[in-house]
Length: 144
Image (cartoon, rainbow, N blue to C red; front, side, top):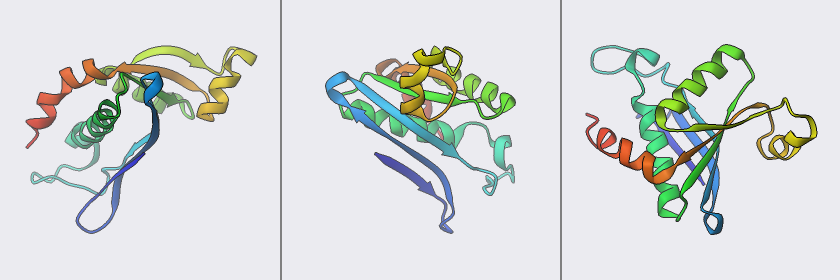
């Protein structure tokens, strides 16, 4: 499953990839990248000044696809390539409704399966898909 968003000029501003394992009720969110640095709204605000609008929309679309596929849990890894970015990712995902499952990378061989699946160290997080949709459906619909 790949979902992407481009602006009118064709510049890619958001992309998400992953897969669903509906028999297990699981959606694996491999990546969610949003780059709003080149976008501005009607008030001239750019990048992070604009808030979580596009990120929320992309995350909502991905979660809705998982729900339609019959999944009830979404899993993601807040990658830890840089401490400051990692902290920001964890806060962002927690605001969205993800909860920490494990810290990947500190437990030796017990982390091997996570490292093979995710390809890096970081914070493994899960979200309850129905709870996510209950929390965010109205705010997403109300975005202007």
